[in-house]
Image (cartoon, rainbow, N blue to C red):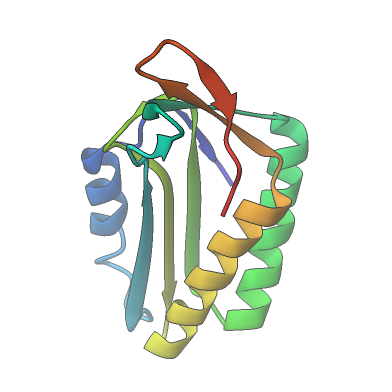
Length: 142
């Protein structure tokens, strides 16, 4: 797996190129995409303006590789891509991109949900919420 972690926001161009590359694959019957976007959450009196993501990269990559292997077997996938931002991502920008492909649609729906939940719970990624008040706090995943 390459380019698991992307510095800053994941651009619409990056997502479009990923989709376009799959048009030549003739065994795929379905794709599913999950895009996670930074929200302007209110925390107490503070509004989030960005999230600064960090991770234990070596450990996170090992978890992602294991997740990839499990998902391929469990859901009979043809192709799978997981990308997560590292560094600052502003409100409205994309911070996680999961793209799965398989011969049939039911597999991609189940796989996408499974992969997103596994990334949220098992991959050592950390988000620091940055507020307009120039304060910050560590994000709690929900």
